[in-house]
Length: 117
Image 1 (cartoon, rainbow, N blue to C red):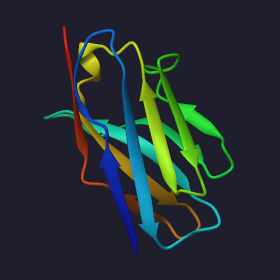
Image 2 (image 1 turned 135 degrees about the vertical axis):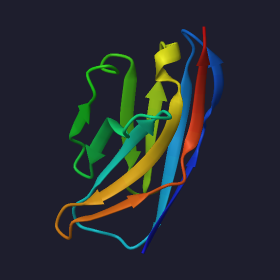
Image 3 (image 1 turned 60 degrees about the vertical axis):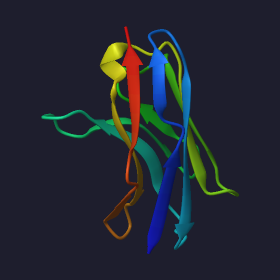
């Protein structure tokens, strides 16, 4: 079992910054992806960014150049630095741990990010 606990959401004005954190506990896997997804009411959850335990990253086109994902494997924590925030970044952000070798996905409870114009 894996538990994911997010922190760092909140309200910020457009152009501002926030940093999300997600700490994992429980089972440890040799290969995994940690990432962030976001969802607004009425829309599907979408990938924001993810990073492998080897450090390979990928980003949604909408956040490239503004968001940076990183992880500390020793702390089993993934971070999302969000700069130049826009109102359209407003969403509930969910931490995800994906284990491709066993086909499992684990999710945090989500943290709300609100960007005002």
